[in-house]
Image 1: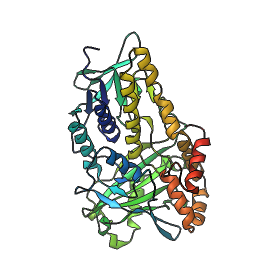
Image 2: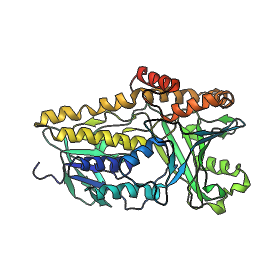
Image 3: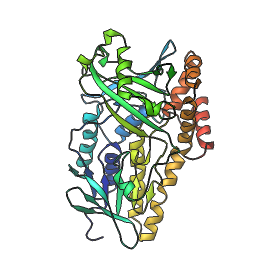
Image 4: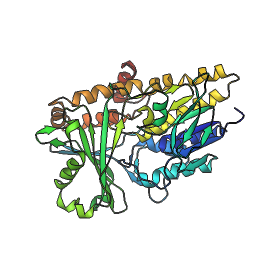
Length: 412
């Protein structure tokens, strides 16, 4: 590997890629981070960060007290004629607040942090596929759209749902995993400043209640991120015009919120949400999958950023350990532990999430849960912990129930 350009190549400078690169650099490795766009750049997202994601930002030394970060106390749930403000739980493992920051500069902040810590970032570099060793079939580098080749003994795919690298290595999506779609836009609105992230649990397609939710997340700059997230477990999933559904949903909002075409500051954009480890294995022949490329999105709530960053940290730790091994065989054995570590960390919980989304996709289940679950504050606080995966390892009774269910559920 004397001709290698880096110890590790990371493809994609979103939250997963930048977090992986940061921790690899912290371990003393030479890291090349390749990003197909140039910052700043837009990504479809709700822009809301739960305490899980906040913890990752704190661990990497991101200054979340700087201008532009908007704190929130918890989650406001609206549905079935009810409205609850649920504070984020008080936990030892996570902070008790969330954040909002637009992806327009959130990803740029993380990428800049990697550069500050020694990562070599190259923007405007589109990776088209893997370079494979003729004898072993292992990935030894990547090719780019402009004809260049970059080489490294380990490559990390952080290139999102449509990952070219994983496809180039023969890794395809699993059809037995849920898929979501998110559509969002921005409005100039009085709703730009709020102490709570707000979600609406009633999305209707004519007379059918859909599995999913709408959101209103104040960005704090005079605008609000307004969007919908839906699951493919509904029979109507393939027949819905998501952008039109968002338009109709916004028209039904109170007029004083000013969710009108005239106040829209960005077009309606959509993105797929690959959930519950829908692409596996997460390691094969020198390629490591992190974040969306491996389907690391929580099926309970569609949260991806926290898991992108957490899988990036886990991957970096294992890669760094592997590259310290004395022989190629020992290095390979260490890298092959990565899928098992991910399954141990998230597999049972993601399986519970799969059961959940299958259930709410059935007629009547979503309606029943909205009507009978929302009136009970204690049940809603339990649901907040469950859906947000926010528990302590040795916490209260609700923590123990959620942790026990996750432990006994089959690994995703």
